[in-house]
Image (tube, rainbow, N blue to C red; front, side, top):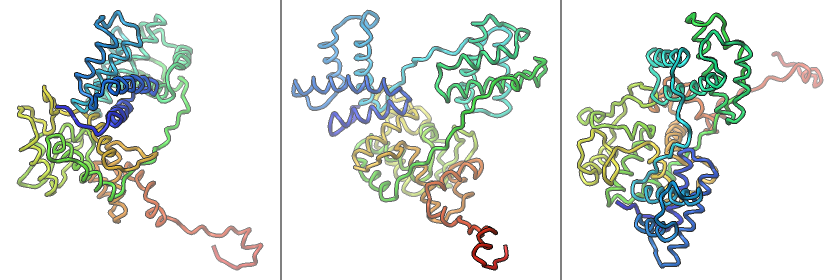
Length: 419
């Protein structure tokens, strides 16, 4: 089913924001936007007001022709991908990210098998989320790839110089990626030493990078802005009913996108008026109240908006094959309604997570205690919640302590004050 946008510019701006949420590079987003402008000019020349996938097909037929993809130059391949992405976005509300990176190195050989064993043991002991397991495999496969390139196939060939050279070979990566590769590798080296697999603790010898992650200032929206956001959702159609229920879950309960997308019928305990779920990120089980407005919104969607499906997931795509929603789809959905509401977000982050920040900040302004907010947000401890204080200046003012006068100042002024 086609989603409706007031203008072609609104469609392309929302799609570009969605690409950014998928961590496409700025240059790739620019290329896509440039190609979409060409499509817009094509539509104006032919008096076409609304974009549809059929318009995209006709545009590519007229501009690119019928040649096979593999025989086309890079510029035309990007043109085809950009138009396909736009058609995908207007029909499904999401764009499936194209895998540009090379796949992780196969974990073969003595060292590869040790990496696999390490990942399995850490997963079992720490209960890592799937994303954490995948990142461990990805970053350690970079280490294995380097070893293979150097002809190192056993632990007997490990040396301090090898570790120094490996760190120096990571200059092509970004600062954060380089930091994570070194961090994961050093943890693996520590594990090898503690398990007696290697006689030397190379994690101590290997160079350390000086990357310090700066905490990001949470962005939030005021209560009035959130009211405007919810009010602009057209709940007379299936898209609006679904989108309203999903956004309301984040606004009222502070749920993460992953938890909303993965929510199943079994999580709704209607008789007890609560939602019980295992968080996708932390695996911790949380219980949240099923407020009246939330229940009404979900029922409205289930009765009049959800496609017929045997899937256990509550929120589904509204075009065949009616799969469950993915996390990133919520980003594009929120961009659409922010534009419709006219909210000016300027430099503020404006993804669904900002609504989670907003709930925490508004609770702080109501003098809600940190342990209660931590419970609502599903934080394992209050340390994670303290970051939200940085945007609540009123609460910060209450924490100001009086600084005692210095002895030198007391001597100069002749004041007799005991310290």
